[in-house]
Structure formats: structure tokens, C-alpha cells
Length: 154
Image (tube, rainbow, N blue to C red; front, side, top):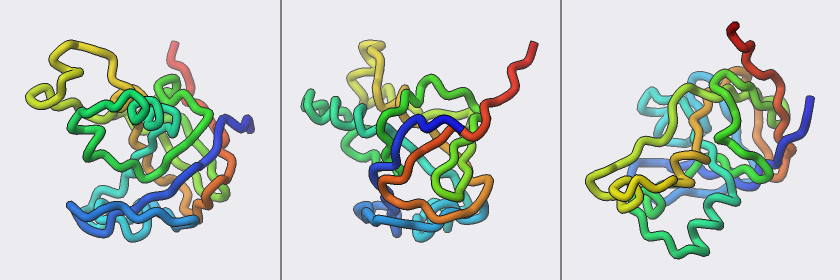
């Protein structure tokens, strides 16, 4: 397996509207997603992943988009170009295996200046949803590996 990055931060949100809580380690499961995150309680066990580089770049640019202000990823990764990962790609972090889903962060054209100008959005391009295929415990600063790439259809 090739190491492609590192898990920089783990954040769960106990209830909708509450601030996220960062932790050094957290369990993930196919049924509940990230332990303690309200999305798992609502039946959506998907996790969101985003790159630390994209968040830092938008912060440095003083970006004021509504999505950026409200969005809190569950897992912040570094060293990875998430836009290059095909749906179906499996990532391994410690003993957990996460699968890239075939959906991305949606835009809000009614309130986002980037959408109005048709600009390229780092949040949309570097944010991905993943499902948990194999449960485990995620640990901050653990390496991230590509376990398996999807089979290309001919």
C-alpha cells in the first residue's frame, strides 16, 4: 500500500448547530459513522474529509463564503489531492477502511459568491464523503494509505 497522506484532525459534532469537538482518536463503524457525531444518529453514517491545505488556503485568503464558515469536516487530511481520488477508492487509516463515495459537497448558488461567478471552489473540489467499510479506531497523525483503487471499466 502506498502512503498518500496523514490524518491531521478528527472532529465530531454531537448535535446539529453545536460546535465540533476535536479529539485525538475516535471509533468509526459502518452503522454509525464517526462515534458521537450527530449524522450517525440521523441515519447518515458518512463522514466528510477535507484537506488541511485547502482549509489553510481559504483561511489565508480571508474567504468569507457561507459554506466555509459553517462547514466542519470530520477528518482533516494532509498531503492528499482528494479531487484525484475516484469514487470507490478505499483508504486505510490504522485498521479502519473508508470508501470514497460518489458524491461531493453541494454548492449553494443563492448565497455563495464563488458559485455566482462560476469560480473553482476548493471546498467543493477537496471535500469528499466516505463510508466506513471496516470499523476501527482512527488516531490523529496516523498515515493514510490507498488500500485499493476502483477497477476501471473498459
